[in-house]
Length: 361
Image (cartoon, rainbow, N blue to C red):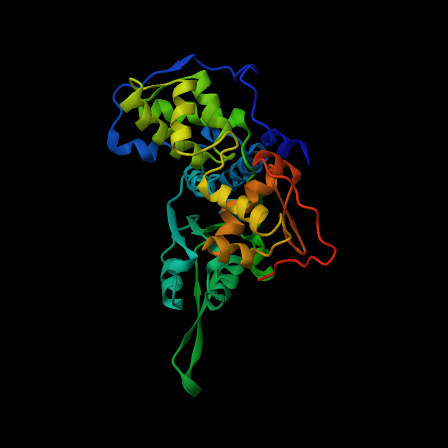
């Protein structure tokens, strides 16, 4: 396992020094409660924590596009959910100083929907497509000429009298996000100038995010509370902010409103979030694999049926982090629990039978 994965494998000991920051994050004065949730998202690239390589590439491309007064190259952002793809798309528009429009692949059902969006774009505008891998194939074909030549071919009429009319589009920037880059077709993928992968965050980076969010939400939290949350949010800022809000509720009701290390541990125990950040869904998946399928190999469809889950949810939500921290291996024969998983859940590996077959269905 590489060094990055190793950072998540074992919780950081409490004796290790915390990143440099103030001992107590106090509530900020004059905050508007209505805007709390929106303000959790950074607005500028310099405020975006982590993803150093991604930010460096984006900063260079944005500076070049602004100096030439041109539209930025099309950008594909991919990685597990909750790492900041939507936030980065909005930041790109803000750094370029251009309008921002957002939609999602599943929302577009007919060609007219996509045609209307494309023809109304302003020059250099950022068009953000979330879940682009779920865009219908017939709509994806419309994008090819729009992304490459800024032209849109539409068919007018039917039968022998039908004719093709070409509409000129203003140069724009297409920013797409996906959790399943392998599902994108090769023609669509080749039209992106920047392909940027977002990685899971390190605990120190998550600590900075939690500190910032606590200040915005008006929550008092100390270093130990920050470190406890940072180690248990699965390397994901979205989960970090969600846990912070739930621990805030616990602290306000049972601990005079201040989140200390002990308060954070008590609150997370109530939420059934352990030292690895596992929740009920993660534990059910791993225990099903270990107890029902002897640790694997087991196919994703078999696990989905046993858990009453969608196979896509297992592949997109649960598996990436479990693989990253070394609890799960994905092989051609199926999913396999690792020795680390057996130790964590206090299970003894069973001796494999010589005639054992993988559970595929």
